[in-house]
Image (cartoon, rainbow, N blue to C red; front, side):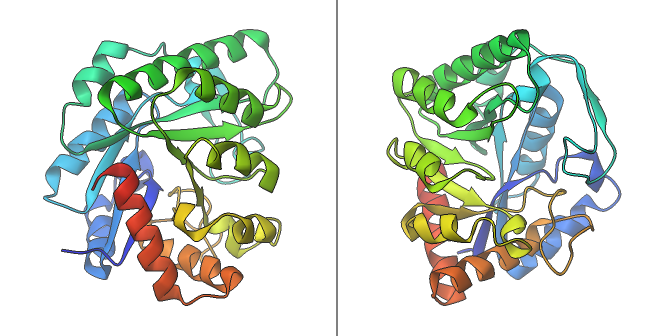
Length: 277
């Protein structure tokens, strides 16, 4: 089956979907929308693979260690954008062999979400994040799989510039810069490295990223929900899910002055090409 849209970054493997996960996936598949579930540590990476293996097509997995999970820390609502309860990260060291073995599943289409999250200051956190990022770049390069990047600057430093520098010196593969919220100049750092840029439902309820969406070429754009977070209008404040990716595509089309069909076709092709699905 040829999909109508692909949600390039979802977390239906997360506990927020425990009560109705199958129904959520079926809603998306019935609409013709595929999605990629992204792991953030060992257990959610394993669950992303298990979930993908349950379906013949339309559900895929990216596995890896999120930068905020490289150290034990508490993440509150202010840090998470005011959506849902906070949570405590137990902290993990990237287990290269575990992820290498998990990546043998044909449904694993990428490595991540990895990168740099500098929302908080702290040299120890920065060092741990950079080490995990470089290890995941090494694994992706070994396996020939694209990277799924998480990038957030803040009190800890300029995440975009540092990540681009690390990729330029370490990586043999490209990937996608997920939930991109930087400037056009910062986007250019990753476009020049062959990366795609993905946008979330945030673009439906703020104009802050209008110029950025217009700047990124359509053949380098992916659409995503990042569910269960950041639901687009008119579902803002509710739990997000893959079927809502259509609202993101619609807003991209509006900003680009194109039809929704053009954007859906292009972003679907971009996602399939990058992740080889």
